Image 1 (cartoon, rainbow, N blue to C red):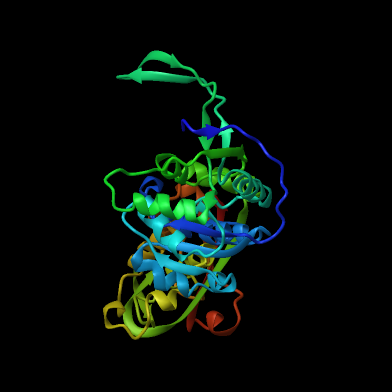
Image 2 (image 1 turned 180 degrees about the vertical axis):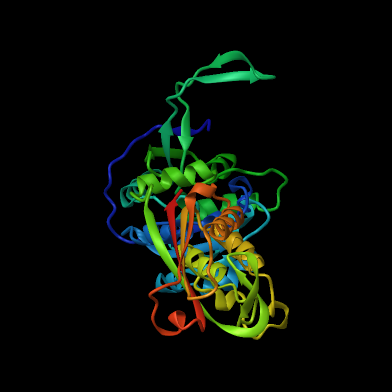
Length: 396
């Protein structure tokens, strides 16, 4: 950033003078699958955290979210975006195309552009950037490079690089609207991929001032960044336990499906699918842990293709949803209640092995036990089997 000026200022602005454009049109390729902006910090999607943090800054008048065209209607329907009276517009193929769309939608004299994946942006940082823009026309937050820099070829260090005068750029970056709009439109259809707004402005000949960045202003790009953001938000290592319960009466057909096993000589449980009360309770507990509701909406009982489905397939689908929740499963504890059939230690151990394989846990972290005596109600009368499942999870 050859024109970056290391000029640090103090906060003076306390009135709404800026529109904030949040760029949220990326592909999340480096997160290893899934939409990173939908991953959660403190139970809220990253994009919601980012939006609410910017909206809390007194200098920000309006939020504009730029997203992929196919997600525009979905985000417009989000309660937390409606609460912020945010504008949602479709973005373009590259960052500068999306920025151009966002700046066109802005009306305030100053426009800030912020990464949707920086959820920990502070009010103080926004104030410093806006103050820098008011003083110099354009500004970005930046942190000095403190690590030693090396050049390497083929895995071999070839030289050391001088770090004096080098900065790590953050967002929000911004400028007076007319400057940023002219710079964005000039490169909206060019060939080069321009990484940030400072680069856009520099190419247009606009000097860009720097203000002190914030080490907590983490950009969530890799899984390790998400863990770091959660720690800095005070969420790291949060553990909790969720409960799933299922109950089915015996039917007239033979062949009991329970815990992923076929128990011959016992009647099948009545249900739309295979009626495996243990695996259904497991599914409900996993969905509760990941904020996914219950099993019904995923596999409606009226759907023909789910009739008689192997309950292990249900668990596989639920685990797919669970994998995108940024939770880590640590243990499963199942209790089966029913006067019949009598389930011996070997059969219960086999069930534990099946469950461990289905959810990807070590066998030692799965417990399956049964109570057949001293039961009341339909369970004691042998008309029903109930199952409860406790799953322990922690944020990662």
